[in-house]
Length: 159
Image (cartoon, rainbow, N blue to C red; front, side, top):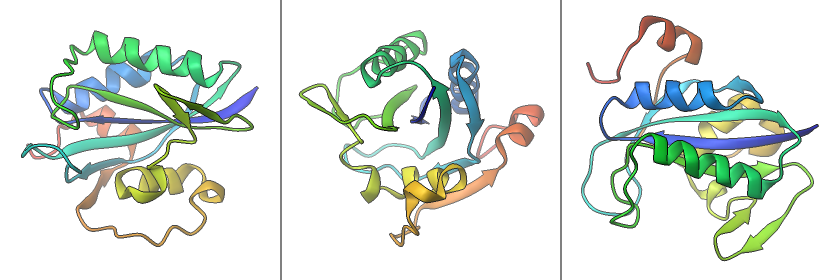
């Protein structure tokens, strides 16, 4: 089994609902970070995101994790019209222990993960060894609460 991490984000529709549905479908998930509300990075003017990082204990390759992430995005009704635009669900393969991929449609480790607070802050909860004392900017990142707690209460950020 291999340790892997996926980053999930959403800023359209029932944000928490999209995350709950996606996490429930990840069979080899072993932990979920707290839920963070974050400012969008790049792209057009858009609403704030909810973000989590999911830890997996898996036998799947990075390519197989990408396929699952794309299927989860499709199930959430994601439409790819504008690069870095608003989305119902975004799933990124962040890290797979012992695996490096450098292909046009997949790079692992994720090439920008170490630059993004919306990835590194929740990742540090699950894998401080990977976060490495990340000292980047935390502006625009607000922890809403523990995954289990928020799911149990069914809260949507901002309501």
